[in-house]
Amino acid sequence: MVTKCANPSCGALFHSLRNGKLFLVDLPRCSSGPGGERGGRLAGRTAEYFWLCDQCSADLTVVVDGSGQPAVAKARASGRV
Image (cartoon, rainbow, N blue to C red; front, side, top):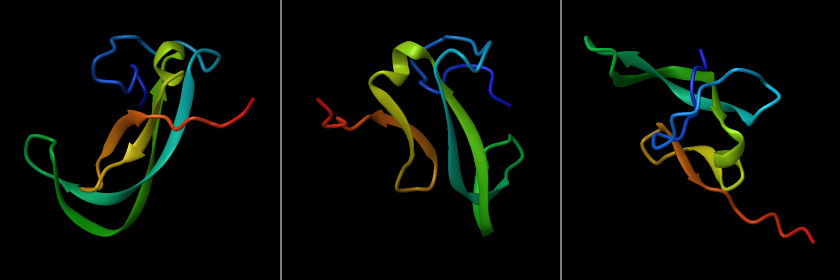
């Protein structure tokens, strides 16, 4: 469940779909360890939602890093005029 901005350095709370940007990210399925941490990979994939507030979504996007974990990264310039 989306409760706050996916940017770890932002504390904005999710209240409405009208504010910010919602991302549907395709992640590898992972088993959960005793503390809820992600463990080994399982077969298949799963989709998970992440939200960035208005301020963060202006410059950032949500991606899957090299280890298959969700991460926030600088958004590419759109090249639009």
